[in-house]
Length: 256
Image (cartoon, rainbow, N blue to C red):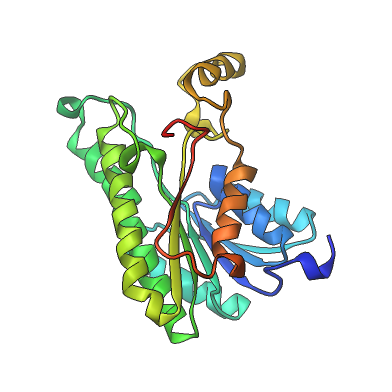
């Protein structure tokens, strides 16, 4: 890849939930495009694995353990990212949880609150401090990971998850309108099933999962983390300068 094609060269990018799955794929994709990437999450060991993968590819990254449900953690995370890498140009909010499927009457209070604390309150806190820094330093771009479940389709047994992700879509669009005049451009990506452990049923083999997805999705397969990352990079790039408050659905035709 030539220097001219590295469209995020020199940019500082923060990825929450960067230790695994979509977050890791996003971090690696930004690093390949020249960004200096901070990955954040609760589990230090997986964050270090992501950093090692970035560095093995010649990129630069830092691991910062943080709990996005705690305002003090998020504030410190943004400050540390800006201090180490000279600012904050892009933030990608991938951190989230997927609770065990349960009918509405069977969801426990703990499951409900944990889901909303992470998927919604954590998303709000992340944006709150990211936006505050960006608008004070010339702007930036934020991409939130939502879901095709919630705002775009329903699924039995997933009420808490669907409600939290539907709210993320509303939060994203409202924040986009609130802060575009501050120079902060905010959008979302709503994946369907992605090739991560989150899309695998308990005890399911790779062959069984592949067969299930062939039947469930028009495209006949799950999306790769690389496909989701490519959409995130586009929304964060200058090529999407007029894209504000969008929710890009990548679900293999499930909601077509």
